[in-house]
Amino acid sequence: MWKSLQTFAPSPKHSMAALGILFSALIVILFLADLRTRYHNAIDAAKNEALKDAAILSDNTVLTFEAADRGLREAELIRLGGLTGNYATPDAMNAALRHVVQTSPFVVAVGWTNAVGDLLAHSYDKTPPGEYRGLAALCGTA
Image (cartoon, rainbow, N blue to C red; front, top):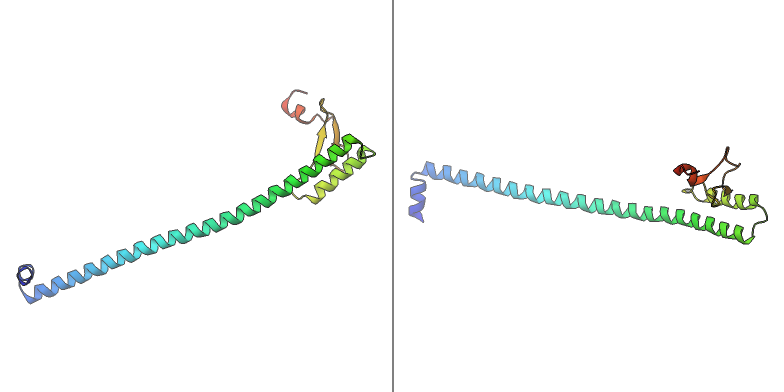
């Protein structure tokens, strides 16, 4: 080992220079290892934070769709009640639909038509202006 060191650094000055170079290389290697570790830790922390945010967002989305679904189920019950005669007048059915819209922040309006497209019930305060033909008008078949 001493012979290989003597061939690498034949004088004390050269051995000090070699030791300095080795020490510098060791510092660079340790710095790069620390940099790699910090990089991977930062990526893992960002991934965990993104997963937390995604979990919160998905929980809120579930609540939103449940509220909209609940409003639409209530509207369906009102429609079935109207078909079976539970509401004395169409205005009573419209008032019940308005109540559904007022209690559900995600439902803007509810209404239904017959097969021809005539508006039977709606959640508007007044009858919509003009001739209403529902989806048939939107599709261009009315």
